[in-house]
Length: 133
Image (tube, rainbow, N blue to C red):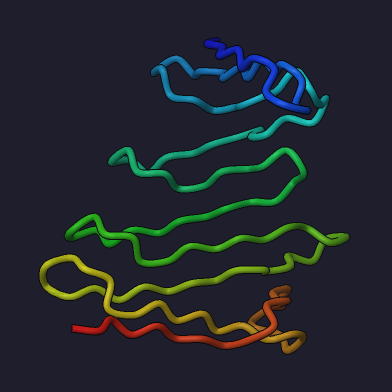
């Protein structure tokens, strides 16, 4: 474990943030002295060491996928379990140019249609960002 103490600042009380490490020295949990709910309760990595998922203390899960050839981020998702149904609140898909720059971020999100078994989006809109040259 490793801890950092943050002093009182304005109306904020002092806080100790403690990271839990696995046997390889990776942070797999993060807790705070001001709440019994951990900030991060789990973390996984790909075989090459990139962040694969992070479970937040409130049960939300952040997942990441990476291009196996160049290591660039290809998607980022956020979801939580709602009585056995996986609810998606983010599902961004990224495209890259040959130099590795993000050329688009496509978020296929809408309120209720099913996207495969047990997957529904709660994002209010569909958006695409295109890189301006």
